[in-house]
Length: 348
Ligand code: ACO
Image (cartoon, rainbow, N blue to C red; front, side, top):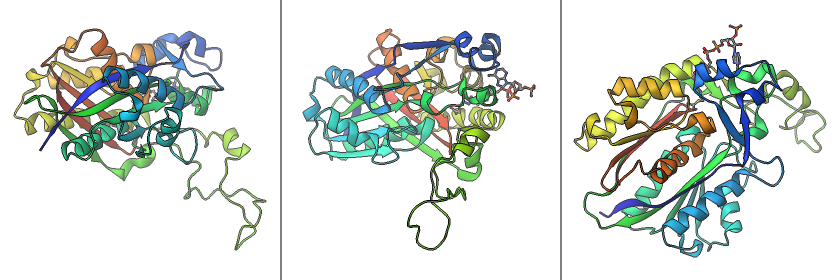
């Protein structure tokens, strides 16, 4: 079986910086509350018009492709992870394909929230390992800012999230012992509603009147109503404490699983790049695993939680800052809505 590696990596964040103090213009919050609870100092928001999940993904992909020494025409499969797609359908992968003038290759969207990039990387790894594809583009991108509740009612959720994109190119490698060593994926839907955005969704039971030509009844179909915006049900909903409790258990568990699979120990990890959910979660995981502070990379302070984009943005930034060297053992791990979680162990 072939081995796969990350051959190129890139990230893009929008230019618009919103500090915690900037958010106090819209809601009752404070720099002190946000920093103490989440570690976040500022985040980026995409331009309202013209900058989308896809366009940010394209910017990150261009860099990853160039660094992999290929061209967009060489990409033979595209995987795009996002929970904030430009359209309800089709997905962002085909939009990126069109934008980058790629060939008629397969294009797949992944909807696994904060674990989306790890899921996407794992799929890319399998395709490359079996010899099916040679240049898989994996993108994680989010434009959260268009769907957050910026009133005081939504502050516990909205202060956490930011916009951005990261991308990698996955290729086969012949270097023995190097590349993606293993990936590990898990999910448990038992607490799906602890972190969710319900609409538009077919189980909502919310019907909008006056939908034309509905077959059996007077009632209408599923569209976002003014009432949903007014009562807040249109926005993401999170039980923060339930998420915290589960995350601090599942992160270490899935990292231990990856290490055990490869007969390695936590002390072998050169750099852990956790999904940037919350600085307190990362610090808890670091202590639980007995890692030093410098073994864990965090940049949530600058970008907030960018969900499917957070791992590739952090990986790229760590690499650009020289924190990942040839031969290093890098562990990626994520936990998010679903709940879903996963890890990937890479010998760089
Ligand atoms: N600014 C000021 N006050 C706030 C804010 C805010 N942005 N948000 C909530 N508050 C208030 C609440 O209204 C509440 O006030 P009250 O005591 O008068 O009722 C008080 O702060 C405490 O609220 P809690 O929700 O209990 O706050 P908590 O200490 O649990 O912190 C947080 C909330 C930060 C979300 C925490 O639960 C947490 O860290 N959870 C982990 C979830 C997480 O990180 N999610 C990231 C996304 S999911 C993922 O990526 C895996």
